[in-house]
Image (cartoon, chains in turn orange, cyan):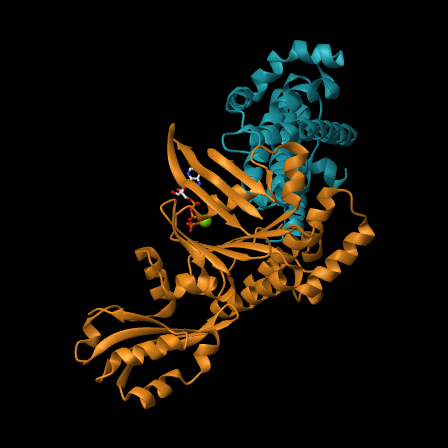
Length: 334
Length: 224
Ligand SMILES: Nc1ncnc2c1ncn2[C@@H]1O[C@H](COP(=O)(O)OP(=O)(O)OP(=O)(O)O)[C@@H](O)[C@H]1O
Ligand SMILES: [Mg+2]
């Protein structure tokens, strides 16, 4: 468990303190994948780096597993950091060392692990990330996706309970991004690791996170379960992120020729695949006109979102029936 | 007369041989001590600079000033100024041992700057990653900075070695021995141009060898 207790961070720039992160209160539960999304300069990296104290909070406290670590120094700090893995946008591998030696690095600097154990652990990790064949190569000989896998293996070497990911997929193409995210989700499931992930892409959040915090100019402007935030974004910033991920249409003009009331229906879980609409049409005789739609998954949960125009005498009955089937409805104003 | 004697009538080849050995001894000895002093000094400069791992801006300014002063004094002047120091350390102020002190004091600050520059080239992200893994500053220096900067460090040492060849030749003027001394003694003062030619040619060869050796090592350790 990671807890921010009114933790804030200001940087000293030309003698003046410039706030990068306003006081944050939040708890990241053990074993969850927690996403932080925000635009460039919103304070995401700052927030992440407070967790392993690469930055010290200017005010407030940081707790890890109920222990106040804010002032940890020396060997206490190093031990704390050994229990927190971190991966980076630009991988940050040691270019002078082979893949195997990069993965072994955190174990070697801890100094209390035998070479035999290190070799065994490195083999196991390279297997986990699918790089066994590349153990003897140097980072410069690897693709971006492979480098990030080395980064992940290295971050897991000392069996941390927390993994911090700073824009871990931002330098990768969509396909490689998908495979790295899949690997992270797999690690989270198999090892029960807490993952804190920062990104500027809602799609990354949607695929792997359980909960998300939206950061805007140092403020957490929205936070909640990914499904809730994704399907019902409240803050304008969140809406923009969701719209980007969705390639969702804007408001208004394109519906101008459509008659009837407009609704956005959000299906989640089982409801996504049940024939709710056809039942409603049969029972109430309403007509609907499908304007846009999407069926996808939020982490492991299927969801669908449809925008439609409805006409007929019994629209309200239809809405009630749809709601009864567990589907959220929002009326879209034009 | 052999062709060598026809071409170089004045030259005593045994003397040239001895001068070569003297130059190599001076170079080897001074390079060794230059690295021993310059490398840690360069690491200190790097670590204490603003925003670095062990930022101590005042200490950095002080170190930096000393380095700049030593680098700005012309080597010949430095050598003369250092005569008392040299005497105190080695007991002599001339000859090979006598030359090594000013050579090292002249070259170590130069190397230190090159080391500092090479270390600054190391990706900040890599240092940060090591910190995030719980590495101590000394582990970061020995296991991250030095290996990552190795090509730059070797290149710096090569430039320093070449500069030292020049310094040893200058040292010859104040009686330090070696090829420089011969060139000055016979080639310039005694007007025997063949001495000048041969000694300069040998110095050129030496510099070439040092440079290509350095280049090879740089290539070998570059993994980017
Ligand atoms: N070491 C620093 N010194 C001064 N200001 C800093 C420092 N690090 C970050 N900042 C400032 O703090 C703010 C937040 O930076 P941060 O790196 O946390 O943003 P971010 O959300 O991670 O952005 P990006 O997506 O570009 O990585 C920015 O305005 C940045 O300029
Ligand atoms: Mg960032």
